[in-house]
Image (cartoon, rainbow, N blue to C red; front, top):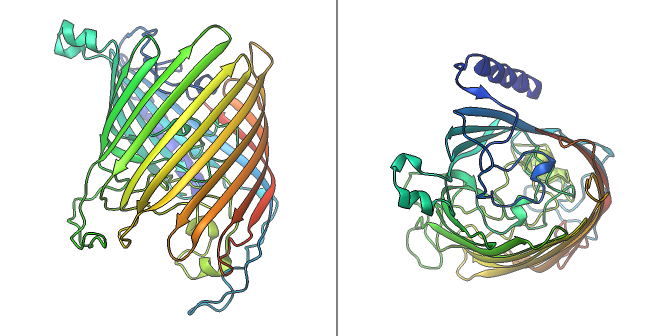
Length: 456
């Protein structure tokens, strides 16, 4: 099925490009105000306001990502056997794992330079763990110039302003610029993302002010949903006793990012995201591609009780923890990025609270993470050594209570070219505080993953 999809899409792309008018140029260079898909996009966050690319007409850039991972993970737990009503075997027995290749994943990215200072992006998940068939991730338009308004005042304002509109990554925190996204794993020095993965695509707009001093600010408004709906709410909010409302989500970011000298870069940001009432918010579970640790801490009996008997399908987020703040969420994140020559540190502090629609009080979740990376040799940085520590503490619903999850990972990587990367990681993740009849009680998984990645 996947091979058929790749063949069909490849034919469509090639045919489409061959039929373009002569004045529309397919290019493999850089677009205006753009983050490269390959190694040159590593440690790039918001796109720069530096105008270094001359506009020469409508251009189309077809890019993509492909990754292949070998997994050798072992797991254990101390949960007691538990057979709920309707099951014939224990739901706390771990699914046996083999040392084998994961499902390969791939993305397709199309960027279009529509006009001077106006760029459009469309990204598709061609094949991934969670959505094995092709799905559109999202699309947005980015304005760095508004020349069509013929206003000198607006042109001067836009020298420091960027506007994005569409279904795109929610710019909450800085970690989403470093995470793996389906087949796009080249920005991430590790195999997986955080234990609590803050990522979603929502419909909305974000407005940036970027000062040459390094200070920048962002304010945004989204619909608070990954899956939009025009249907009126039918559920009742347990806290208010009233029909549910679909409020907009409000987000913002304030930061400072400066290349202090040729050796040292300093970046510090603070972000927030708040939603009072939503249909089904997915900020902590909006990844439609799934975890890059396959089937860890999962159970076959639970899979068999669903319409999907493959653990890849019924539980695509293994190794992650979703606190379940689907109705209301208020969350804050601070990030620090330091880079001195080849040595870099990226840190995260996060505090969130929220609830599901069936709850009357808010619960909490706090997360801390630190990456220490050394890239070498100086001037090229084709190789790296890295270590990450990530810990999550949260109050979970459904009688689970307060839990903690700790992950330690070490990595070694190599950029063979700007477009080809290989990395290997050792990971050790431990679960604490789960009830004795929960599969994660005393849970642990550890081992090695090796990944090859291509981006263009």
